[in-house]
Image (cartoon, rainbow, N blue to C red; front, top):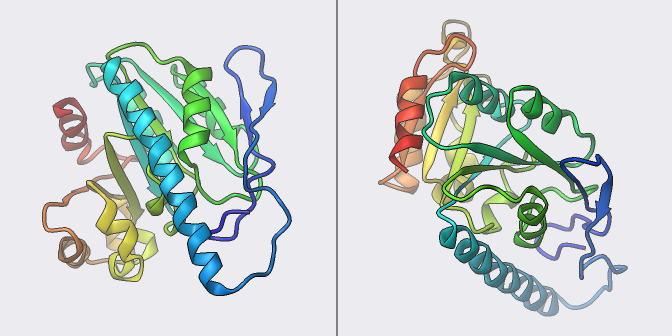
Length: 251
C-alpha cells in the first residue's frame, strides 16, 4: 500500500521487449493496511518518499553515465501523451534514438502503439497503483536497456496528483494538458505544475470549439513556477510541433 496516496503496488508487472512475458515486480508496501495514528502515517509517507528519492538518484546516475536523457511525461488520461510520442517518432526530427517505458494500470495497448510507430518499448502495469516510482523505472530500464546517448520517455500513469511527488531519476518533467480539460488546471493541481519543467497544451485545433484561455493557463502555471516553458500545439494538425522538437533537441 502506498502511504502517500493509498494505492496498491503489490501487483506491478513489467512486460519485456522480446518474449512478451510479464514479470512480477516485488514491492515492500504490498502488505495489509494497519490502522495507526496519523503521526505514524506521516512517518511512513516520509520514509517512502525518501527511499524513492534515493533510488531515483541511482537511476539518474545510471542514465547520466550513459548519456541518456529521460523525460517523465505526466497528464490526465486522454490528454495525448501517447499520441504526442507517436507523432514525435514519425516526425523523425529528434537527433537521438528514442525508446519508451509505458505506465498504465492495465493492458499493453500503449506500448504496442509505440512499437507500431517504430520505437522500442516496454509496458509497466501498476495494477491498482496510480503512478510510476523509481523502483519500477529501475527495473524497466534494465528490461529496456536503452542505448547510450539516446532519449527515453517515461510515460506515467494518467493522473495529475501522485506522479508529481515521485522522482523517477528523469532529466525533466513534462506535463501535458488538453484544451478540453479547462484552463484552470494549474491552480487546481498546483503540485503537478510546480514540479514541471515544460507544459504542453495539446489539442489547440479544438480552441474554436471550447472555452479555454491559453494565456490564462500559462500565466497561472508561471505563478507556480516562473521559469516554466509553455508550448501550445496540436498533435492532430501538427501546429506548434516545431517548438516541441526544438525543446527536445536542446536537451
